[in-house]
Image 1: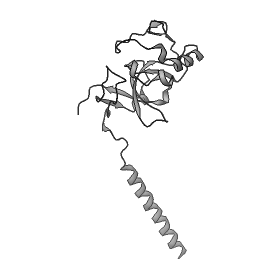
Image 2: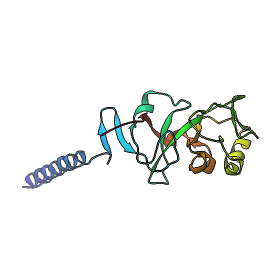
Image 3: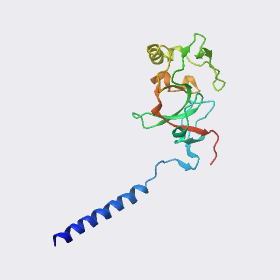
Image 4: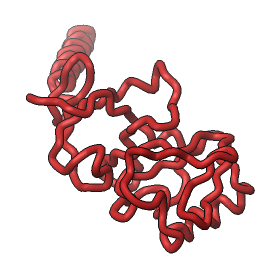
Length: 183
């Protein structure tokens, strides 16, 4: 009699386990529209203007950096654990790059002026750099291993490394792989 009771408990637990697996596998992973190439995402805000405009649809590959290295100039999706939203920004500098913010409002990357044909106006405003300048001074102007400098293309209206400093690579969660996507 005791054996029958144990068999029923074990059978109940197996059924419960199978039901849990079926239920969890039915929950969608992302709320955005997905395709084989990535996730369709709408740009929210003007921090990447003129490259990306508010409301524009882009395709994001959230698995891209599992097989590729982060490169300077990549337009990436970043996510901080302390924020619900994801941001889209541009990689400006990589680990071991030397950065100088010149008096001429130009960024010097490894001793040369960084050519930024994707922005309008100055590369930065000195008054926006207090956090970043302190951090860069601590590292003698060289990005430490695992850290990246990211900026929006619309430098006057972007919440980026000028506000929160260098970011860890673990916060870079995807790459924008297509800029002009139609539904």
